[in-house]
Length: 192
Image 1 (tube, one colour):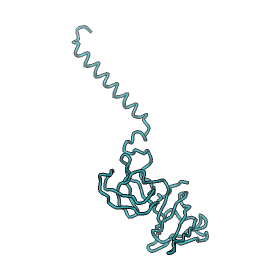
Image 2 (image 1 turned 90 degrees about the vertical axis):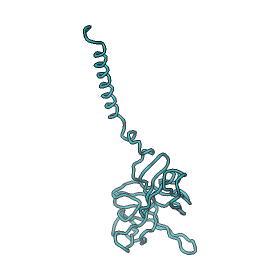
Image 3 (image 1 turned 120 degrees about the vertical axis):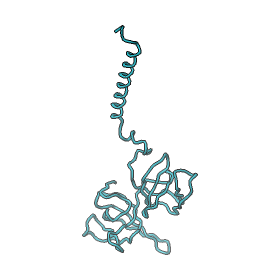
Image 4 (image 1 turned 45 degrees about the horizontal axis):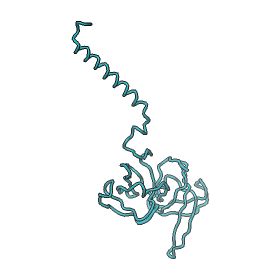
């Protein structure tokens, strides 16, 4: 033991210590919850997800910050959007037309809204009194008609559709729409 150079023993001891530290770090990483390991998602909520605009007007920007140019402006509130990316307090959104841009998280809300998206071209979405294709028809919604989505069970969504006549009087219809005929929910998504 005394005939070995001191330098060689220190190197061997150092390599053993580094190897032990690396193994300990790897073991600790397996204990970190996946939500904490995903640093690219500041909110911790799943991506992508649907939300809606909170107020009006809302500027949609080309990048995540006020220093970026405004791409377009939403003039109405409760417009359904899909959040596809997060950066700090900014959310990259996609609208029904596929346009993408950035808005501040405070300009979005969890209220679910959607658009009628008929399966047949030039068709209508039937708003039914109950969760059945044979239930009474309450209204027929043209493509792009906005609805507020209360809940979905994976097949049917409970929605409210409101229309306004030229004299600004509103009429609301509540009922059920097949989930596959709405833009604003994912197939088989369930929530209440």
